[in-house]
Amino acid sequence: MTQPHSMFEPARPPREEKRQRVLMCAPDDFDVRYVINPWMEHQIGRTARSLAREQWQNLRALVAERAEVELVTPAAGLPDMVFTANAGFVLRNVAVVSRFRAEQRRPEEPLFRAFFEARGFAVAAWPDELAFEGAGDALIDRGADVVWCGHGMRSADEAPAALERIIGRRVIGLRLVDPRFYHLDTCCCPLAGGYLLYYPPAFDAASRAAIEAVVPREKRIAIDEADAMRFACNAVDLDGCVAMNDASPQLQKRLGDAGFVPVLTPLSEFMKAGGAAKCLTLKLSED
Ligand code: ARG
Image (cartoon, rainbow, N blue to C red; front, side):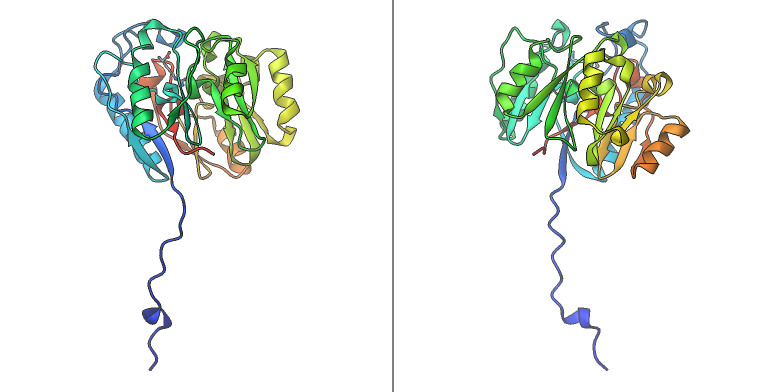
């Protein structure tokens, strides 16, 4: 009797797939202690600590199924540091560290800078006087060779041009006009295959036109206010799985029809600070 062929074959090395790396920060000192966006109003001291931790752990586990999670050490007294999307903007080996508009978040800057340096990123020089809140406002499109950069709320109007000079890729500025959607990642999410999940009323007319000029109609997934308020755009896209706080059944179906698998992971405690799934993550491996 011949042995099954496989017994004589050397074990095949696992397919060399480069796993994505995603930065997160444990919510050790997370809370709402000041108000720098409308979601934080009336929420000071109202986050439930253990629920926040549980929700963050659930998100972390979801991400860890599809990517390598890296952690930056949280610092006491910096309750918003958990939102690592605002650590900076990463493209290949370059990191542009955020320059926060709000005083309260500025002490996070050297901590994130030290993280990027320790991981071997080249930290780009950024003008001190120019507010820029990293991957909260700068999002790499997954179809076109462009980076979208929200401005007018947190990041300065000059930020898109400054970013373009540094990264040498076309950066299209999008003007945000609704204070509830104060970071681009609260109202816009580029998805694999060139899809764009977004809430059009969060942008001025010229920005909506700019989006329509780049993203073909069949790739635009425009959502309504109810889904926008669930922070459905604040989603993490990993291998076709789209993790988000919540979405209507209709939106889930539309995402499914486009080939994505929506995964709902409640983040109520972080919503009180104005953030959800995407804000709590930063992709570190971007080319
Ligand atoms: N409380 C934080 C702030 O206002 C929330 C940041 C959310 N981050 C994001 N990428 N949208 O700065």
